[in-house]
Image 1 (cartoon, one colour):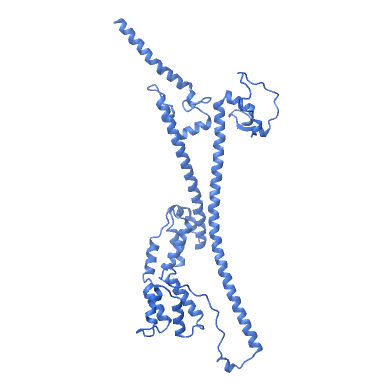
Image 2: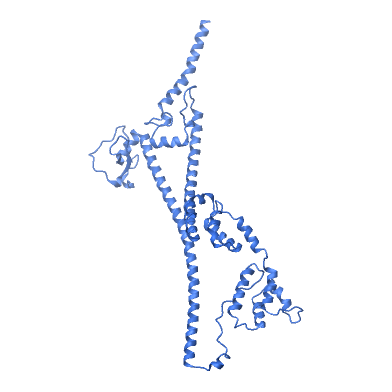
Length: 419
């Protein structure tokens, strides 16, 4: 491509009307030349054009040069569109990988936590064995000694209104806490006090009357307290509601597959769907397009995890294709509006002879105009070497249209003289 210093400033030399003298031809410098496709009959079909050649083409063959530059521009747009599509595909793939990384990180954290707990248990057992080895005791009195207490697990969050946290989650954590650390809460009084300490707001308001010493129906143990809270916050129709929602769950064309899969797995677990049925249930709830593309995979003996992985990859490819189709529609719509505007202008200013086939821009479809533009042909007569505004056939037709009224006037004048 030519550098700014290599291009002469327009108007720096007076124009004399004569073609500039050609100096001895030297090998073109790639920095001061461009590549332009030649005509089909030329060999080679693609050659370098210097700035001097470019000026000659501007003076002698401007339409031809415009067509070649238009071809270069269209190729550049195609390259840009492909790059954008690949970039969108890479971004979608990256988002999918990010989700997998988050899941793997969560699993790693859970494994690390379990490993740390197992390490603590191992060390505790090792210390106990070492202590018993160094300090032998009488087995008859060993049973009377109290064993070491269990390691405390984290406390569940405070229960307020049964929504955040959900009562079901809180109840599960509380039950696990009391079972795992039963040696810390070895009396009904301690268990009642601990459950009360993990309640606040409306939940605390419900249990306070039966915790008072003068209560007519006091709690006997923590089990009574949890059962009382169940009657208030537990949803007896939870499974039925989940089954109804699961029956009505179907993937929409606008849904992302990962979001739909997350909701599907949650409702399937709530509704008690068997693991053996998950694969078929998921296949019948995805979009019809995704069903067509995964038909071979559903009939295979692969696992549910393999099927969901295949669906995820296929859905990502469909999103990329949809993105490209949308961009192409927008581009075609814009070209169509431009073509319609130019066609209406041409039909308003040019008159055609009655009975002659119409070859104006108004009858040329958008696709035909693009094809003619790529081939460097006229929109009117479909021949090369000129634009539709300079078409000789159209000029001839206009001239005949203008001469026809003159001939009719002359005939009328002769008839009047004869009378």
